Amino acid sequence: MTKITAIIPTLNEEIHIKEAIESVKFADEIIVIDSYSTDKTLEIASNYNVKIIKRKFDDFSSQKNFAIDQAKHSWIYILDADERVTTEVEKEILEAVKDPKEFVGFFVRRTFYFCGKRVDYSGFQRDKVIRLFLREHCKYTGLVHERILTKGKLGFFKHKIDHFSYRNYDHYISKMNHYATIRASELHEKGNKVNIYHVMIKPAARFFIHYIIRLGFLDGFTGFLVAKTQAYGVLTRYIKLWLLNKGIKE
Picture 1: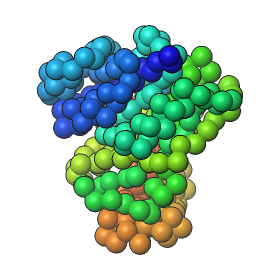
Picture 2: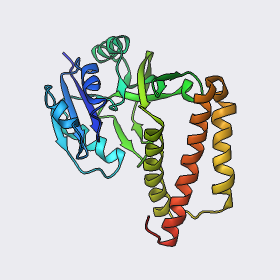
Picture 3: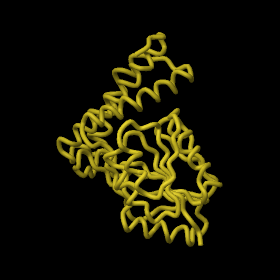
């Protein structure tokens, strides 16, 4: 019988970790790879039959690839701590590993929630990620907004998982800052420089894309907040890159 290892990367996820683990209890092995949380994440996780690995965070891809190397089983299901596998997707996962046909991995779509409110537009209506895959054919790459390089055909699940990405607005801003720091470092290492286009046009374009093109206005004020904060993230990325270019420490 084909077995599955579920992997949950964590850093101070005491709010999410219990429900995250509960949603992947169908897996034959659960690994929590933790970036030295200072809250009760590991205390809560230790109440379950999970393997806890502590590793200093360097980037998202390295963290996940390291955990994958520790897995006992070939089929891997990656779960961010703020995601929940629904019962419908659980059934699809179990059916997929039993008879994957020609597929080496599967996309799953996500239902996005902001501060407990479901967001139907703002660009999230097309949100999909590869979550189930054979580790022999797939590997993470990229420092932030990491993606999986695959050698083989990918399938799609019909149902969606739930994604509770931002529990409040401060958390949203905190994540945008974190992503901006990593992305700015990546751009700096590639020799990128900042110009007026990056700080004036790109943030405005990002707002327009999320609020107008991706129909964020249909999500009401929540859609406005999403678009505004996405624009803020772009602006912050290039401010941080400018500081790195100048050799100024934050």
